[in-house]
Length: 306
Image 1 (cartoon, rainbow, N blue to C red):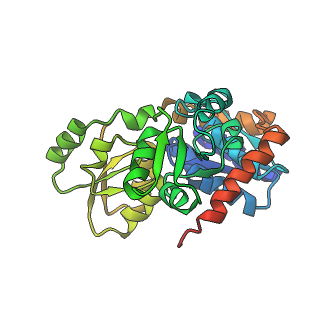
Image 2 (image 1 turned 90 degrees about the vertical axis):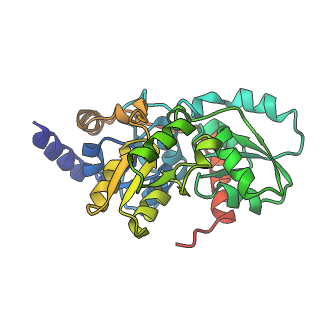
């Protein structure tokens, strides 16, 4: 049955000139059928380069929105309409406007893990990989950072010369790891390097051997001479890490680091999305243009070395 579903997905994809993008946290079988697997912004940028009519985004709502912002002429489908992001939902346009009014002439830096509406009200966007570079590059001494307080703390460490005022938001999946979890895991796997995401708590980051975005973790695991790794991010990434590094061992820092929203997408929902052309994600044009400006400012401020 699984093989039949996959065959039908691939056939429909071909017929409709579609591509499938899967986030690093998606189920293994979703990663296997994807044309590209990566982080949300990496995938949206990839879609810009590709000749296709339809983008099936296997991720969460804000990611499909970002793909639509950057690819307005393409149809973006989100297989599971209720796949949201609790952290992105911790702030909206109204809350941001009210909060920012208390800090006149202070720009908002929005993590890409935000809604289009929040991006549209921001000076620039950032990713977990480039956040410190963006804050360092902008011509302001003080910034408002939304929505992740843990990522904001990581940026403060990297850019101590600037004042960073964080919104009180967090990723529930990363925030669940505590210092004791790292200590316990290190006792179980004493030879493993601890690699964590900057969305983790500051005390967890203090105990890490390396801090990186999901894409950064993929690169680090590949280039490192170490053979064992404790991974402090959503467990879906371990599937990709094992697949790309069969000679190395990867263990979750905590087995319960599972984002329910990232796991709702199934082969059946991808098939339904392509069959029935649902659910189409389209950002209102006035919001799209402002959000695109914030994303493009990020691209202009930060040029990756590789």
